[in-house]
Length: 563
Image 1 (cartoon, rainbow, N blue to C red):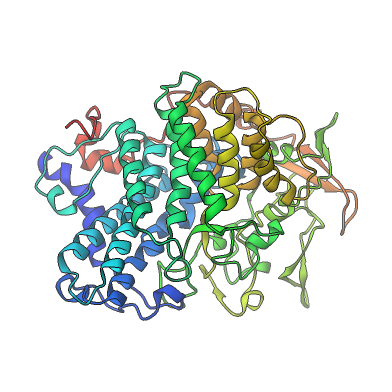
Image 2 (image 1 turned 45 degrees about the vertical axis):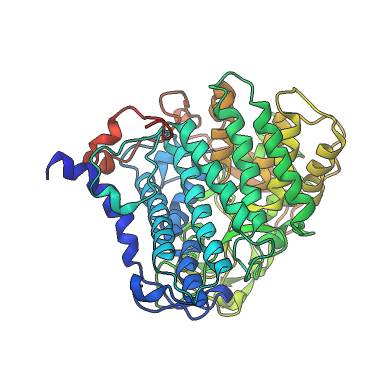
């Protein structure tokens, strides 16, 4: 293979394969009657329904490989909110390499999103006939631009400089493709999301479809992060971008019609899809016999087959010691940690010995019962993952099978917008007592069953709230990357203070405990309890296979807007 061919091969493989993706039939409301064979460009985009079926793919299948295992490996294991004792250790130990499986899987998945979005835009522009209404054409292109921008947000935050590609076909004839600077990638994706916001409808065309408020919520997120990007690690953030984050967050809060669910746990109780709090979710469907349109993640998170459907492979996954220490009421003692918390998010995110989960059926010798999370072992057990684990098929109306679940994956909830507003108001200050910022922070805080915060808001308080609120939603790593842009040392300090190893949890009684003791497992190698995050290992390395096939990825990045 020549160098010229190698340079183009990897992206052509990731981007062009998407033109042959098969749209599978499924039962989501906005995926009604999709084609069951490959799309033929010249004959397909002729009606509103055909255009909508084509872009429906962007809500699920193209994100599958990221959602499958990479989402929690990067978003939570690497961030330190959860860990795996025996698997995925590269991410747990902050030693992700170019050969770590989830590193390559995520990279390829994001570029598949980009490639399919590019093809959708080009095909709609080229082939959409008179039978396609202007509103549908405009909305469908906006959907593709939204997805492309979001994929690039993941790419730039994980790998830094990455190549911006808008046309898959010209890539085949271009021998100069190389990475673009993070600053120009952020400028590009902000421009794209602003354009999407202009063309998306205020009310979703169908349940689960994007709206203007989905895009403006992402703009609030983008501007908050971008405020630190331009600072170059100076410790301060750009005030203009902070003001933009506040502006868009305020609009979404006041005008979107979205609202927090009353009970935090209900966010993850079946059926929760497309609820009032969700601004954008990946749209999965229970699809027996199909692959790529279903949610496979619960198979790897459920702690045992006793609560699963022929899967349940998450027995070594659970909350880290550091994560448990964040909850109010769990306090240090002479032997470790102990206590109880009023924070309802703990039980809804992780399973503690003796806790009841009436919505999940547990197989026991001779029968079944509602799940009571077991108390076992003598020096190590796991506070297993609860979030996104919904149980057996009988618990979800028959809509579950091995590695095949239908419930959606949150990509942005209204709770985040409240916290974005609060952080944007705090800005470069050490604290704030701004009335609206305090009100919005406390909407999230008190929903969890906690008393309202009365002392001034600080960055530490907001970060802690985010870590707890979004644990096991693939968010924590990106919060740390956002922090790293403007205050890298603080990001390193948070990561390096974490204990990521095994411990034993003892309830005061079983079942129905009122408090727990947490004791570090004594035989664990002390050297694996903490990591050493630094400037040399903070970003992910570009996957080895990609570097081998695309040597231009080794070249210095260039500004996308000054080529």
